[in-house]
Amino acid sequence: MIKAQDLVLPSVAGLAPYQPGKPIEELQRELGIDEPVKLASNENPVGPSPLAIEAIKAALPELNRYPDGASYALVRKIAERHGVAPEQVFPASGSVEVINLLGFLFLRPGLNSVYSEHSFAIYPLATAAAGGEHKVVKTSDGFAHDLEAMAAAIDANTRIVFLGNPNNPTGTIYRRAEWKRFLERVPEHVVIVADEAYFEFVRDGQYPDSLQDHDDQRLIITLRTFSKIFGLAGIRVGYAVARPDIIQMLHNVRQPFNVTSLAQVAAVAGMDDTAHLARTLQVNAEGMDYLEAEFKRLGLSFVPSHANFILVEVGDGRAVYDGLLRKGVIVRPMNGYGYPHHVRISVGLPEENRRLIAALSEVTRA
Ligand SMILES: Cc1ncc(COP(=O)(O)O)c(C=O)c1O
Image 1: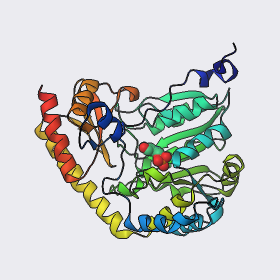
Image 2: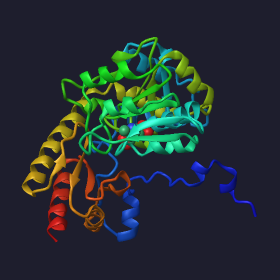
Image 3: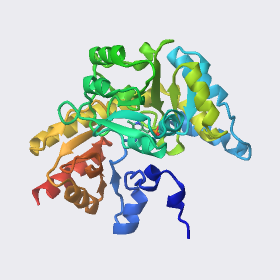
Image 4: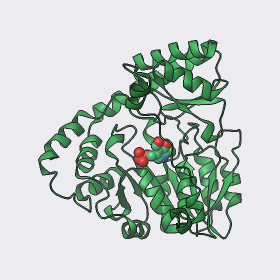
């Protein structure tokens, strides 16, 4: 019998699917834990915007209709927010959809993508899915992107450079001067993907907003999402901003209704909820301060983070992850990201952070 694996690209046959954070329901089923705390997927612990919930409720009676395939209102709202033309905006079912489409558009056997070691797992997956080759660049200090080395890794067959800023799972950023030098070195046949899923959390004055550097020459794609600060991870909506010719290519290969009707109205409403955004930022900043102080107290080193999660060195990462699970706290093991001694912890609500610290101090002491 012929196997499906024999009919697809070898790079696809050998893939391991993306490993998401453990769902709360799964932990409840497996260990019978009453109220687990999930700090594993960099979600917004405050919840979705009440305005988004209202908009979703109001749209429910129309669920028999297909969504607006052009996401008209959402595209205009995003364009207005960033001061760009609607033709420069591509809404998607999460920013991950864009990353995958970019792989299919620009990569194939013989062509490569450049990305950093210890960066978001979807970059290698999207590359392999398209049969592309991988140029994985070492970090400068074990954690942060080395943009100079990444520029040096580009060759005539490179079509995409994936940059996470802030990077997941390290929470590190590159700053404006480094980014500008990088832009000068990248040749024009390379698509620069600035993945800024955590943009709104960053407080560093030297953090570059890649939207400021879009022009007619460069192939810059800025990725943003409604999954993080906007608290809409479950409904799947994100977007790309880029030159109209790139956006047109994305439209050519997307599925016809890639953003659901509920996602469209939720994102539009959520964007206006300044109270929800302010509260989320405050919860994150206070939570991050608390976690850092507690890690210091426990003698655990961590990577200072610019996002809503933090990478902490705990010894045997897998064992600590398992120990925390048994105490009802879900974090993210980091073996797959090349950090067997770390776990990644998303900032939660104050009570969730306290539960994490109580469990972590017991597990790391044991
Ligand atoms: C760096 C980075 N990019 C993109 C995403 C995906 O976001 P979305 O939910 O919009 O697909 C994540 C989510 O964890 C991320 O960490």
